[in-house]
Image 1 (tube, one colour):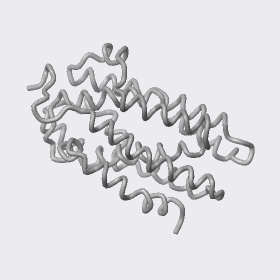
Image 2 (cartoon, rainbow, N blue to C red):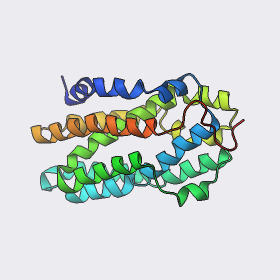
Image 3 (cartoon, rainbow, N blue to C red):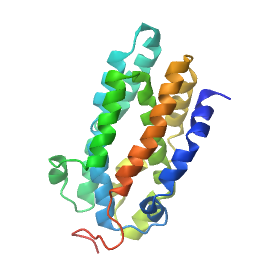
Length: 224
């Protein structure tokens, strides 16, 4: 079994726990409000804006034996630049206040998730950051593939309100293949252990972000 398959298999319980969170199940059924979607995008903005800084920090802390991985980080950076602005555009297309989101503070769960990522890069093994990439990219891809169309129909929102999710859709197979090939090149056990450890922790931390989103009777201004 290659390491990518091992990573998926050994973090599958944590993945299942994340996808069992009620608001994610609501999203998959299209049973969300516009305010809830904006709340999701708001927290997405607060962690996605750290993606490029984290990739840069990770690349700067890799040693010479990981030069191939540093080059991959540079490719990721090129792809990820500006994605937080896509999210703000989605919020505006929903009728939300994108400028207010830009200047807002993240929920504590989002702040802790981002802080944990910096801790791993700065003080543990920077290669472990790939575990966060695995969780966030995989979750976004699943939501885009299975929930975006349902949510768009249920909320009567224009396609311009889903640019962030749609960028992770099922057609983004090349990106998934790139990540799979990347982690399969990891030969050192400490690197593999770090990626798996971070992935497991990130499923829980990202799950807390979803748990922080409003449900049920919680309706935001602007909801129908």
